[in-house]
Image (cartoon, rainbow, N blue to C red; front, top):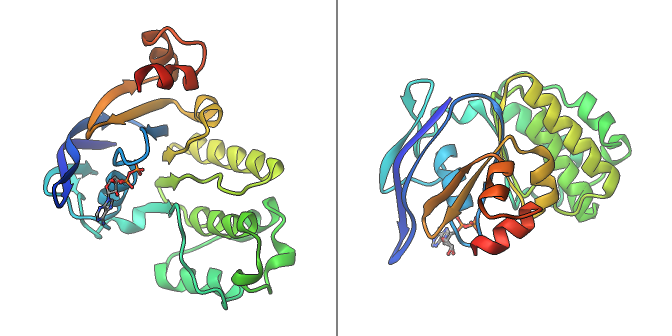
Length: 230
Ligand code: ADP
């Protein structure tokens, strides 16, 4: 589905991604892991065309999409920090993004799933962090994108919303979609991920199943395994 070859990116003297090579052959949930600053967000932004790599390719549907906006419409993106004007109402932001993307959107089932009906006429600036995150989740999942990128999607969510999000991610997976996720919550990764790609010092330290990573490090859980690697 996606082939990454020789992706490199530096910011000034800082070599963030040295030489990334890996392949994701089919849909499913792939967790991108690594310590703070290991380049997870940079890699995802290259995939989205928001950062231009210094070299390398990312092939998707036989086309090189590294640093290119051309395939942006195929990708649903939940950024770590979504910046929308505080004075917009939830209803207005949904309409605005639907207009910009110019594609069919079905926000209604998501609004219902996350109990967002009562917030539709509220301004973003008046919402709690968790409720804002639910708006961002609706914005990400309301288009039928074959690839979905979730950068720390659980920020501020209450336990029920977290369950709903997990259900939603699994539902999208069952449609054959590729979901790339970063999270510091290892229990979530362990529960959801079919595969993990572990970035360390600009390279891929490990790619495989959570079970393989645990047994490689002789660990009982993923948190343990990562503590042993770092
Ligand atoms: P992660 O998501 O794994 O925490 P990031 O990809 O956000 O890592 O960042 C990797 C490193 O690159 C960090 O040291 C960060 O400060 C640096 N970095 C990211 N984006 C920029 C940028 N636009 N300009 C300069 N440095 C950047």
